[in-house]
Picture: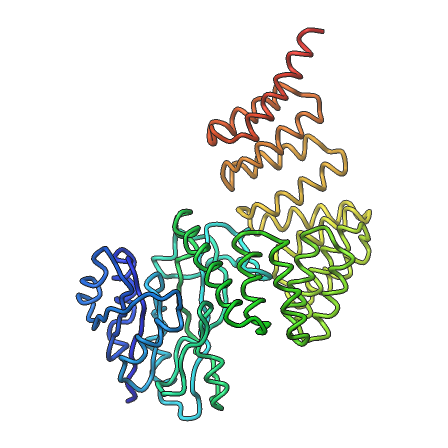
Length: 444
């Protein structure tokens, strides 16, 4: 039977590492953990989990660190995990036959990135409802999914490339290796970490992405990756667009860069320009349903509701179970004049996923546009009940009550918001404005 090694780089992860190592117990023949400078008990925890621990310098380069760990392995195959990940139990059954394949050099593995809201997105990918039976995933309502090569043959010509977003996939393909699909998943909990931890990781990804662009100024993929960091993690759409456009210049065949350039322009309100980039993305092979949804968003913003409806329907033909798409189609039906059909779609979407905040927002927009302010307010109140006390929901509720001239209930909504977010300036300013109206009415 071929042997498999677990290869990891770690730092200050004593809390998450035990579960990671436990998830591979009995499935790997050796564990190599490269520590980049922990100040907690991570090395001791790794040794207790059966790992051989080596100390390596951190030189602002993930590929270099991973290759130092990789060089210490001796098995036939290498499995790569991070400390905040766990291997799915199904791997115990699926892994052995994969290792016996003679014509495959590496396997793409689905990574489930758990998040705390169905409204989260990973670029163009919406969150999916968490259907995992793994105990550790139960606190999370949703996950974002992507693929990566995490299981590959140990070979001197297969190594990690890239200061950040490092991968062995490019080397594997360059050496003529064949890629397969693993069939099992890896559960990743890093996106659900506390805000401070996520912010630190995002800052590091941005800095390393900038260094990678300086290292490889003519590499369109490097510019694209930095754009994704700006788009996904910092929502700096102007900076993201600069990166995507440079990626398109350097590699005009990179369809995904054209797609994100178009998506970013739509975010910036440059819808007509975005449509041109999205059309180019489709010509360069970007998945048509994703392009169609983005085109639908652009046409909706341009108030061309009939064309938007056609785009959403085209996307739905591929993603029939996508509740967010159904909700968008419902809103555009309302705006196109098919009011009852549209409202039914919007309400049905909420029935299917009652904790998804964006679905409430679209139904609110529909009711407000129809002048049904009491119904809109009731939807916001339901959203607050089922998705949590988000400040923007209290602001929206106050705005609706203000449109009704009901300043007392507008003030109540804002005071409720300040109960949960007492230091939020926009709530305080809104309450001051409402109180001024209340005073003005009282003096009449």
